[in-house]
Image (cartoon, rainbow, N blue to C red; front, side):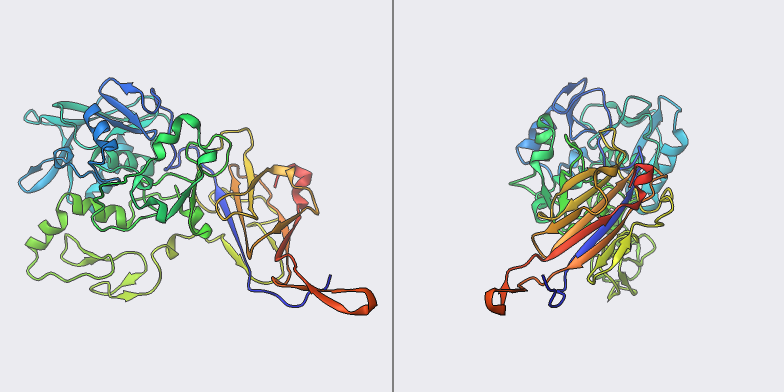
Length: 439
C-alpha cells in the first residue's frame, strides 16, 4: 500500500488528573434519586426539592438552570438579597465561609449569621455526602446544606450553595441537546430520569450554555460501566466538563440576573457603560467581561470563551509523528491537568479511544493495550482521552500514521495501478511503559 499524500486530519489528546472530591460528580447521599426525603425529593444526585416543586419541575414551571419561581429566591433587606445561615456542625466551617465569600465577591448577595427576626435560613451540616435544597424553601425555618466527607473543596461548596440560592444543574437546561450528547446506554437504569430536560418552559435569562459552569456535571456522571454519559458535541471540549474550581463568568451572570444585581448596580452608577459580548455592568460601574474579551465595553474579542479553559496538555495532531503523554517516560506529575471524578471500577488509569463515534469509544485499562496494537479510524478524526487517577502512571508513546482519505495506489494484474478506497487514519500504540503494568 503506497501513501499518496496526507489529508488534514485531527487527533485530539487529553489527559485528566483525578481527584476524589472533584466538582461535577454525584456524591453519596442518604437517599436515592426520586426517593422522598424528610422534607423533599432527591433529584440529580445532590439536589433536594419539596414535593410541590418536584411536581412543578416535571410540569415545566421552572428554569432548568436558574429557578423561575420568585418565591424560591432569597428576599431583600434594604435592597440587598440576604441569605441567613447557622452551623449545626463546625466541621469544614472555614471552607464553607470561604464558599459564601466567593459568592459575595461576584454577586450582590449577602450571607450573614441568622438573627432572631429571620424566618428562613440555611443550616450547614456535616452529613453523608454533598447536597442542598433548591432555592429558599416555602416552609419557614432552617433548610440543610450538607458538606460531608470529601465535600470541603471550594468548588464543591460553591456548587452546593449554588443550589441553595436557586441554581439547577447546567445539563438540565432545555437547550442541552444543542451542546451535549447523552449516552443513555451508559447511564444507570434507575438514574435515567435525572437526564430529563425542560421541554416547554425556559428562563435561562439569555445566558448561553456553559461547559465550564460550576453547576455542570462531569462526563461520567451516573455511569454504569465507566464510559462517558455526557459527551460534548465538539469532542475537543470534553475535558471542560466537571473541572471548574470557581464560578465562571456565566455562573456569575445568571445569578446577578436572577437577583436583579445588575439593575441595582446600574441605578447607583452616575453613567453606565453599555457592555458588549456577554459583558455586564459590575458593582464598580465597569463592565465585567467574559473570557476572551477586553476593553471598557468588552468590545474587543481576543479569543473564544473556552480558549483559556482548555487543558494545556490537549494536542491536535495533523502530521505523522510519534507523540507521548505529558512528561513521558517519567511519571505523570499530580495536578498535571485538571480534576475528574474517581472511577467506579478498580481500574485507576483509562485510555479512551474514540475511533468510530465522536461521543464515546473503547475504554482500555492500564496495559490492556499491547505494544504494536493499532487503532483504525473510520472517519477523518480520532480522539484520545486519558483518565489518570494516580500520580505514578508513566504514560505512553504512540505513532500516528495518515492515509489518503479517498484512495491508495495498488498494483493490478498487468502492472496497471488502480485507485481504491483507503483507511483515513491509523494510530499505532507503542506502550513502552508496560514494564510497570500501567500506561
